[in-house]
Length: 412
Ligand code: HGY
Ligand code: MN
Ligand code: MN
Image (cartoon, rainbow, N blue to C red):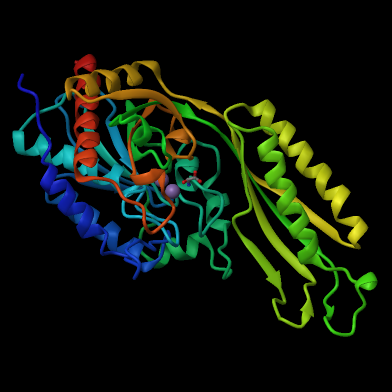
């Protein structure tokens, strides 16, 4: 059977088309989950899939499944997909490439009239980023049974809007029970979001798993007071406390480097006025490492630092771990299909694990799952300057199609 070739030009056109939905003046994307740009790109995606004769199912947390039937209806579908939501200053490729490359694979199958044994589905997972509604990978987490739908519905953004009301507002709360949709496999294509593939001149990352990730929320409480009339010895400066903690969080990650990372990404200083000593500060902590025991050690050092650094400054604090995604290992037979798919395309590849979190990390709990990476320029992502070459995007889509067809052949 001749090998099917994806249409690189058509893929790139779709990537540039969707890059207009939520475009920022600096050439990036702000397509926060469940906002109007998210609804627009969902509408676009649904129309593209329906034009290929696919049916599009939507589950109770907005996950979208565009289905192309296969020859054997007894087989569960093979899924390919990722996410269409972005960071507030995100790029054109994070998540979007995985969905549009899967769409391109579907278009290629449709054009060739190729019938697969199993149905093939393209998936758009809701709220992978967690930038608006924490934690990340929320809807794939509901699909995998990590969270309940009610937990997702109750999540609120920094403006107090709930996931549920926003999902209803954009009209994407489906009727299908999340997780009722059984999958034979999930293949997720994604930009690496790091520097390794580009530095080594490799086109394809054969991904074996995702490192462990934990998020914490901290509120430091001091006393708002006049900056001019309050002597230094009487101050309870919450921002000073937060500053000490930020430096210590960085030191904890560096102590466990090179595999550990630690970041304070969100900080809210109240009342944030030039002549008021900050009375309260809220900040987030993101710790990651391939080994859960090391994450336990980092967590212990972090909590000890709170108790050590803040009380001497007259400060109290509240700390909550709001998210814990343990390290994940992907399915060996799917990894083999990716390796065969890359070899078939004649592309230089290397094995690796993912530093970034992905929906695949949760879906791996309920279906055989794996990922494929392609390089991004300078390893930069979660940044409006994020970019990937048309040839690498096409290479990734080709390997995705090859891997899915190899897996489907094995089901036959
Ligand atoms: O946080 C992550 O790693 C993912 O990009 N949401
Ligand atoms: Mn992503
Ligand atoms: Mn991301």
